[in-house]
Image (cartoon, rainbow, N blue to C red; front, top):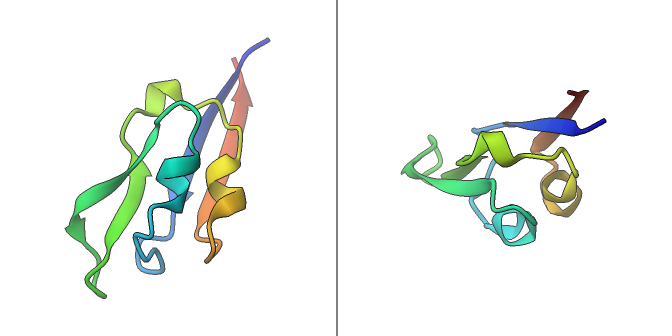
Length: 73
């Protein structure tokens, strides 16, 4: 049974540090071109179909702004 994942990012609290992007083993997470109200780019799912729900992005986020959801498919 495979797992499918999805992330939700608190866009206003994200500082665009990029730690999540560097730690995603399947290159799902990227930074937006637009910025939040504080002027930071935000993490988002650039390739949602590839997300496995591994939680690496949430684990390494220094501000705990990423929530990971996993479902069995």
